[in-house]
Image 1 (cartoon, rainbow, N blue to C red):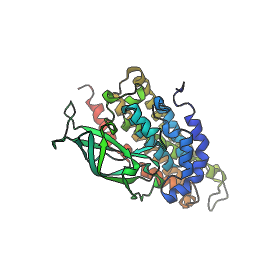
Image 2: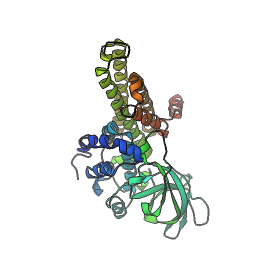
Image 3: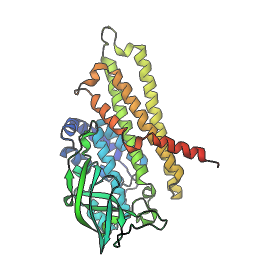
Image 4: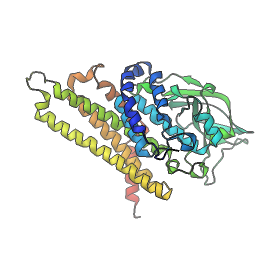
Length: 384
C-alpha cells in the first residue's frame, strides 16, 4: 500500500502534459486519444487514481484527483475529460468482489467506460439479460470494459424495488468486445473524447457483474473515498477540468499581450492600461473560482473522513461550487478569447479549440443553471 494515497499523481500528470499537448491536434483530428497518450496515462497510473489500493490503485483524495485533471486539462481538455470519466468509473470496484474487480481493472487495458442511465435488464437464472443502446460513453475508445446503469425487471416481468420503495437500479459490466460501438460523436468541442454510443443484444450478465452503485451498504472497501457518490466526484473532476482549460487560455492571452502590438497603434498590448486591468480582474476571478472549489472539496473531505457520512449538505455544496466554477471558467475563457482579437480564430493558435472545448463543458449536466435553483430552494427551506 502507498503510505500517502495519491502520492506523485500530480507530478506525473505534469510530466506527461507536454506529450499530451504535442498530441492534441491528432486527438482533435481523429476524435479519440492517441495510443501514445493512452500508453502514457496507463504507464503513469493516472487511470488508477480512484481505484482501491487493494487492487493496486492510488485511492487518491479528491484534491489530488482534481489537481491531476487540472494539469492534463491545461494540455488538452479531451484527454482530461476522458481521464476524469474513466477514473470515476473505476470507483465501482469498491462494490465488486475482489476477483471480479481484479479481472476488470488488472487486465489490460484495465479501463472502464459507461454512459447515461437508461433502459432495463431482466433477471434470469444466474444473472440478467439485456438488449439496449446507451449514449455518452466518454473514454470508451480506450476502454477494455463497458458499463451501463439499468433498472431491474424481475423474472415475473415486474420492476423490482429497493427496501425504501425506490426502483432497483444496478450497474452492469461487460467486456468491450460484447458491444457494438456506434461512432456518433461529432461535436463542436471535446471532440477527442470519443463520447460514442454502444449497443448490446440479448447479452447475459452474470450476477457478479451487476452491482449497486453509490449504495454504502453494498461497499466492500472501507475507505471514505467510496462513500463519496460518483455524481459528486464527476462534478468536482469536471470543474477541475474547466479550471485547467481556463488557466491555459488565460496564460496564452497573457503571453500574447506581452509580445503583441495592437493594430493601428505603436504601443505593445502589455503597456495598455485597459489590457492590464482586464488581465488583473480576470486573474482574480480565476483564482477565486479555484479557491472556492478546492475549499468546498476539502471541507467535505474532512467531514466525510471523520464521520464516514456524505450528507445532503455536502451534495448541495459541491453542486453549487462545481456549477459556479465551470461557468466562471467559461467567462475567463471568453475574456481571453476576446482579448486575443483576430489571433484567436486561427487553429494554429492556442485559443479556438479551448474556446470550443470550454463551451462543450458548459453544456454538460454538471454546469446546468437548474443546480442554482436546487441550492436556492434548499437554502430557503432551512429553518422551516
